[in-house]
Length: 71
Image 1: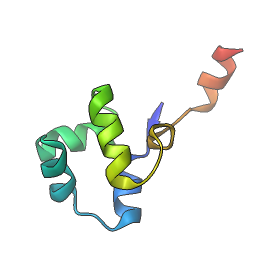
Image 2: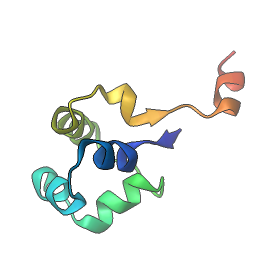
Image 3: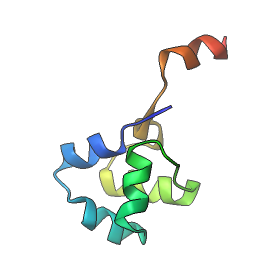
């Protein structure tokens, strides 16, 4: 899965510092989520989706090879 978190934060015009504060995480943690180094917990995913006014599904996109493995 490829993270779209950073892209969505930028598209919505938010500062990453603001998002990190709203989620109760460090800016480094948020950065790691944006770069696929690690993933947020499920409760944080739902809170992030709420803040960004999107669905949890929109926070990530499947990579092409993942679709092939699912079949």
